[in-house]
Image 1: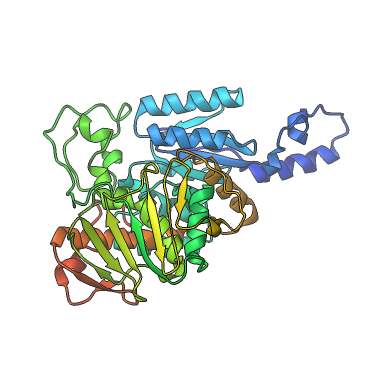
Image 2 (image 1 turned 135 degrees about the horizontal axis):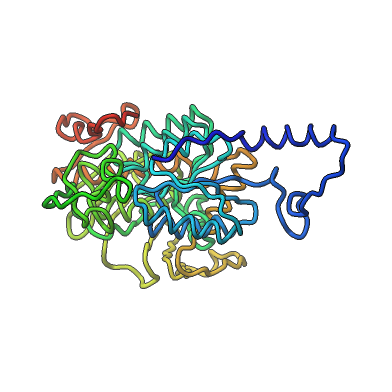
Length: 428
């Protein structure tokens, strides 16, 4: 395990250095980059970053951060040595030095006083727990999705972020892609008339349990720290297939599947369309005729369906009102019931689902201390809708949800599925 850093926090160092410099009689040579010349961002304006869990998705996210001139990555943490080394190489080559430190235990990275913000790109099993540890350490964070495993974690996460005052952005990057944002604006502002239905694509309407595979020889902790990888999840023997790919972590804890994994994208957009302040639907139903129908308190329906979409790419959403409709997907294109809905506006078509704009939104909010588009309230409300839908799927019966008490009405079995025990010592 790496030793804990003992350096002076960056901002305190800068203040001390400036005071000492003013008193020094001898002239000093200061690099132009430290003064913000030649296009460089001065240290006082940089956001210092630590990366936690840098696998495939984390490597992509890290690249989006490094594209921003005001970001300096100081540290990388991962349970796999190969990933630690690969991420450090990327960071050091980008910054032109060898100063990026590596850690196996994310708590050691959080102890660093010179790290302003963290990227949390572990598997979903770790997201909420790592995020709450980061908040308690005073770190702003960009956290990948799904950001919670169950309803109880969603409530704990939003409470922790509100109490700590840190900036939290969940990686629902479509909130910062122009055509998705415009589609949500049409629904939210009444341009479609009274909103009737919002549609989300679930990528599978099944509830899944956590996986268990035959035990294999466990690597040395320095190579793969299996105990840290499991973290708060129930213990199971090491198996390489569980370590990477679409594994038990994606299951969302007790129940999960496509509704949570893909729903954390699509349902998030539906929540934005109806207005994040609605929290979540109050009625949830198992599948019928290829659809899962949920209802908000005002009667608006949230509908999950896999088929019947206009071919506009992955992560399609559709919003229908009394006076019109709009559908959009990852191709960057949207289809409107009437061209008049554009009202002369030009909406950029950006294909795929780049996270660069979302990362920039986060960094700007770190500097201004404002709320990003994927803030904790918005993220956790969308996740509650996904978790409640999964519970109705798992039990195969309709459920009613009390938004004031955050519990299912008259269903003890469903209420037990709102949370799960966490393995020692990971308490939140």
